[in-house]
Every structure is written in structure tokens, then in C-alpha cells.
Length: 559
Image (cartoon, rainbow, N blue to C red; front, side):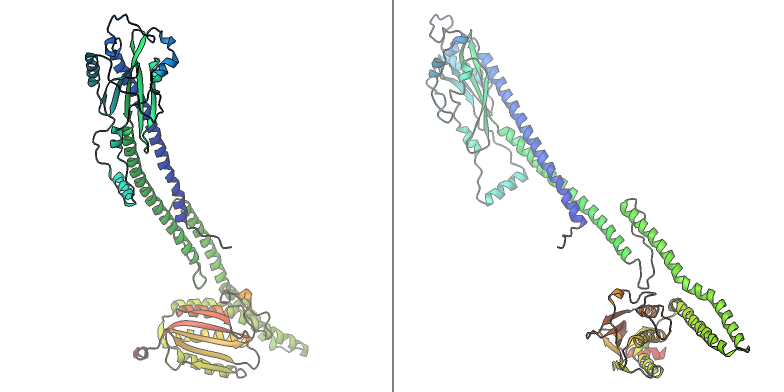
């Protein structure tokens, strides 16, 4: 199963998704801030209720009891800890939190008392709070304020966009301001604890929304009796406005932060990927078509790990280049060093032939001459590649007609190999190639020599020259053994040979096709070898850039 390939930029982009945890952390902070503000609002309402109740303490005339009155009811005769629970609850309307709130019958206190309570509340009136004053019978003495908020400023662009997006799908946000204006007062059960002398606070939701009503109640004392309660209510719209503004700022900051982080990460990943790809490309091209090792310069001055890797590659390639240069020069050095002893052996054999030797010594003398001749051929082959590289470096390319060169070489092959049959198929149009004609002929010599060595008996060697798409293809085919799989991709390397043994005694060092590859590269082409479709032979093809323009011939004649 093929593994999924993920680029470095994709991996860094996936790692950057960790930044998405920042909005979540910010939202958790906003929620914590909302809870803190809600608790602060609750404490503030308790303080307001306590302040109003303090202003109403010890004023019995505000609750319909004139000062110094001796009339005492059953409830007034009990101490603060002796209220009868049944009587207290019986005095309250029996209802659920969703039913009608405490009743508001005609106030029992005097008109002057109600006016005085209203005056006190008017001094404490708040735009976003509603204050109720009730007596022990849950009769409303007076109230002031409203839960409906004042006209708010226009929301931010992000909120407007969100509302527009919701409106496009048919959603219409509820007008919570109108609903808050119709919120009934709290129920009697909610303030029952306050009538027993305790300060209480509670929350009640507004149905169909996330808005809450925060309420606080504080008892009003006359002497040692609870004569009423002050209830203060306020919505959480202000807190929600702060929360929405914080969420909007958080969204904008998160978007900006993620955009900047994405640009930085992608930029860093792109540069890192580019440096790695450059290092890869240079590593792949460190060995040229001739097998020479070149240098490596990608990010060589960088101080990070990629720079260290490139410098390690450069050091490694430099050492390999030194070793390769040593191996390349070994053949010429051996050839040079062995010429003197070979010359000494040759002169000694020649002098020995001038002496009178017994007949049986002639056989050994002939073997010595054959070995010396073979050694001389080996030395010549070893230095051939070096001489060829030097010749290629000093040869100036020129335009020449390849078809004429190939035809002339075929005529020479038929004379040199009289027992071998050659079939040629050359194009009828001239083929102009830029290079050197003698080197092209030497390349063809190597290909034909290789074909002669491997061709089967009574089978012809086919030489073809075609011109297609501004490219000349010169191929040599022979019937015989096919290419071994062990030589795949290595046939044109130096010191590589597919011969197991040479019955003729000719030296073969695996340099023939290597020299042919050098010549093909000098002409801007390349060599390729493949088995014949019938799988009974091999075809070696040299592909060279060429033109069939006759004007090149006239130009060459003038030169």
C-alpha cells in the first residue's frame, strides 16, 4: 500500500492548527469575566436594596401604622423569631414562578406615606433597574424604574455581518427590549425569605433568550419587626453587551493573529522547502553525465541544520571527487610508469632474437612477444579514456554532415570485417550535426566493434540513421545475447563490461561504450541500449541534436 505523501508545508500548516486553541482560551476567559460581572451586579443590587431599605427604616407611617399606635395585630405581636410560617405564607399569593407576581391592590398606607416613599425612590431612580416597595401583606406601596434598556449604539461590523447572515437564512432576532418592558414583578415566593428578615437575591430567566433578570430584596424594619421589603431588579443586557464586544474584539484579534501566523508559517515552510529542494536538486546533479563529481553550494553559509547538512554533503562530495580524480589518473599513471619496463622487455626480446637459440626456445620467445603485445594494448586502452577527455576539452565544435560520415565508415567496416555482413538504412536527406566528424566516426567505431563482438554467426549488423523532430538517431543493432539485468543503467559507465571471457585474447576493460558516451555528450546527445523487440539481440542508439537545413551545408562550404 502506497503511503500518503505529505509535504513539509502541509505538516507545518497542520501544526499551526494548534493556534486554534487560543480562541477557545479567550472565550473561556470571556465567560469567566461574564460570571464575575454577574456576581458584581448581584452584589450591587443587594447594596442598592439595602440603601433604599435603610432610608425606609423606622418609618411606620409609610406602612399605614401611625406612630404611637397601640393597636397590635396577631402578626405584630410576635417576636422576629416567632413568625408563624403558615401565616406568613398564607399572607402571600399562592403561585408558581411563571404565574402572576405579587398583587398590587390599592395601597393601604396614607397618601402622604406613599408620596414620601415615591420621593425617596425617585431620588434613587436608575434607568436600567426597577425598584419595588411592598409591605408584609405583599401590597405594592410604590415602584419606579424600568427594565427596558435605553437606546443602544449600533453594533459593530462583525455583529452586523452576523445578523445579516442570520437574516439571509430567515432568522429574525427577538426584540428583547420590548419583552423586558413587559416583565411582571417577582412572585411572592421569591421574597418570602426577605419577610422573615433575610437579605436574598436570585436569578430568573427571560423565556426564549439568554437574558437573565437579577433581583435582590432587603427587609424594612420598624422597631424589631419586618414591615416590608425593597426589591430591586435589573437585566443582564449590559453584561451581555460587554460580553459581545469582548467576543467581537476576540474574533478580530484571533483572525488577525491566525492570518499573521499563517503567513509567517507558510513563508517559513516555503523557504525551508525551497532550501531542501535546492539541496536535493544539487545532490542529484552532483555527478554530471561524464561521471564527474561537482561541488555543492546550497545554503552552505546558513547556521541551521539544513546548512550543516549541505556542508556535510559538500565535504563528502569533495572527498569523493578527490578519490574519483585519483582513480581517473591511475590509468594514465600506470600507463606512463609501465612504458619504461615494457620498452626494456621489448628491447631485450629483440636482442634475444639476434642470438643463436635452441629450437625449443623459439616457442617461449613467441609467447613472450604475444604477452608483451597484449600488455601494450592494455596500456593503450587504459590511457584511451584520458586522451579522449583531453581531446574533447580542446576540440572546437563545427557543423558537419553526419550522413556522409556514417556512409564512409560503413564502407570501411565492410573492408575491415570481410566475413561480417552489414545492412545499412540511411535517410535520404542531409543530416547536419554540430561537433567533430572524426569523433563521431570514433563513436560509431565503438558501437560497431561492440556489435561485432556479440553478434551471432551468419547474422547481419544493421546500421540506421534517421532524422525526426530535429534529432538524429544513429543506431547499431545486432542479433545475439540480450542485455543482462545486472548491467541495467550501468552499461555506459567506466570499467563496466558484459563479457565473461574473450576467446581471442583481446583486452576489454569496459571503456569502449564509456568513450562512446563521452563523444555523444560532446555532441549534445546521449546513448541508450535496449533489447530488440524479438528479444534476440541488442540495439544501441545515439540520439544527437541535428537539422536537415541545406543552408548549413552552403554555410559550411564557405567556411
